[in-house]
Length: 620
Image (cartoon, rainbow, N blue to C red):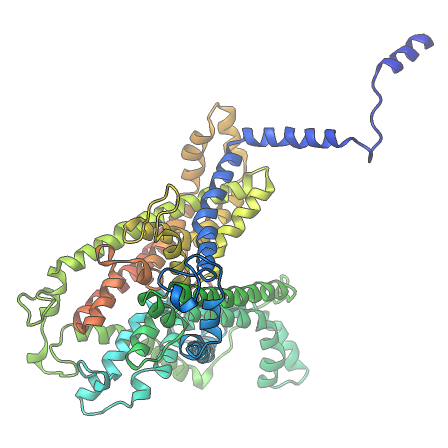
């Protein structure tokens, strides 16, 4: 018996000691795992998605940056180099040449000063409103919680056009503004330039502060304030030493997000700054693209991207640090409302005034301007519907009212089908990205998709448009030149909106367990059938969110399309901007009102369908 046992031990292979396993074994294990992973459709879908988004997001940025380092066609003599050679000419021209002050440094200073001013006023307005809505017994809290974020639903340059109708003077020609028509001539500093741009952007981005700061205040435990008061601290000291330090992460986050948005804002600066040659980085970039200075534009776009990336990385770091702050108590935590007492009525009037100035006044001004023959003349004979439905108008290029103009309907149709197609595609791709990120056994693929689909959020729209222009302006391999076609707009919209769509998809898939799919798989359903019959029906609400958010953002966006659209592919925002350039203010305002209506009612529809609320928690 012992001899048989000895022979069996000799015949069985002995296991290799741990730590000295041959490399061949590790290679075989990796090959085996890869083979198993490739049998899973999720891995194949993830790899294809990674290739697609690399081409749509990373490659355009790289192509644009390469344009900044190579001599472009037409610049050979100025650069004293041959076409396509590596060069530092454009970097020198933007940062160190005699023209650099006009091209970069002055626009940079203007951009920073506007951003700082907009942040300051947005924090004051938004912070005050957030505190009233979240921590006090303000009358109409629930209504104001939704009403005060309406400016976020509207295109930013809606406010700029309203401002020009009210305050512009005839220094740069054209019709007078309302105040000048009534006998009050506004000074230049109030009509154009830094001050009006700053005020308009502050009003537009104040809802950012209301949303971020307000939700943080709502979660703040009132017992912390009570403890400080028991120790003898006055109200101001409690606010300064207790509340604000704990609110610092949300305030800093709002500050940096507003700053990043101001970097790429084009429409407001174009309407209120270009008439007096007041340039910011976005308008300087647009001017160089218009004059075919491709290399200079690439450097400017790269600088805008770098500033945007740095600011949002700082935000990400501060949000991570902010998680160390605990502002929510246990079961005994309270969110007691402060009683305003005699200040309740003035506070409510103040909130109403903010709503009037940021929503009623600009929209009312735009609408009234569309039914006036001459601005600022409030007589019955001056009101008309000609700019909406008129015929044989006394203008050179706009002979009919906006609703009877073929170009308007062509732009509206382009808006709906181009943005709609891009939004639906983004929503589906976002859900697939979420599925891969959560389900794939190859973690690298999921991690890469998570990061690459978020990257467009770090890139201002006008810089992203320049990147697409660099990639698709000429034929590259089998891909034809797409500039001048609707295809480039669809692709650019898809890529730019992926941060919203992918985050919606990832969030949805993280809440969906594997049980429904596994049950379908046991019943014999393949991957495609499981996706179409199980996953998508369950996640239809999240898919709707992933479609509506990109659609609303795309409809009201201007910075991306102003570079890529041509007359044949005009959307409503570019069409209205052309009307502004032609001096047809009434028609331009009518087109902008249509854009604002689509964006506003689209947002309300999205909230209704998804049973969500942008102001959730502010007016409960």
